[in-house]
Image 1 (cartoon, rainbow, N blue to C red):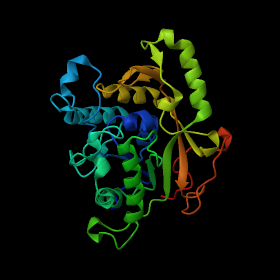
Image 2: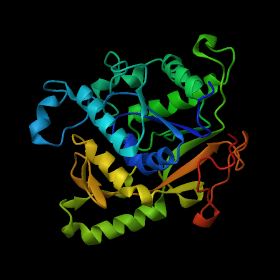
Image 3: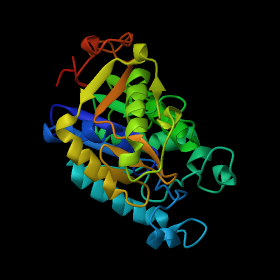
Length: 307
């Protein structure tokens, strides 16, 4: 392909809304700068809880119509972020939301958690070889907070990166492509602690009755693990608007938001990452060491990446 832009970013997420919460500002920033931003969502989030009472009938224990509705929310969110390339892994409905860990939904037919790893990774390999991203963003091995679909999304993304570079794997899916840099979503513990301290002081000024716990924030890690931070202040409105588009799942009251548990959390506009593959210069090899000081961190996911 000769019409690809110089910078290409691929993000792999488990359900609609995960992308806006974790990476909304990053996605909007790079899209605005002309990079190709590709989002792959692995399920439709059919097992999610529904916030608005008027939409409660969509729930899996009633009409079981939440998946298609969340696909529409996802499309609306991507418009807010300026992202035109968003896909469902293997097509809409191929993999079903697996529910929370330890529930019966984990192993129901089509559940993403119980799908064959290489089969699902092959679906992603086709995307990788088509768009040829230099940078991949996904979850850490625990999926940020232990949800089975998040863990599986991590496994599928990492496996697909490996298989996409292997010329012996499915040549029918296109020419091999090696992703130069791979990042996991992270949140520095010190940043989260400071934000939650402020939230607890201001909770009475919010529409929420109670604050969540720092452990409810996916990917919290010690500051020394963080290699990269993206200042998304200029895209705060886009991120909040994208989160609002996921109306069944999120209630936004900037600079806070809540999920279906109605517990308030900070809405972070600076987004953080751990570089786990690719050196500081963007070459393949040993990942960059963690950088506890913000002054030492990368400020661009494409730092050192050649066009």
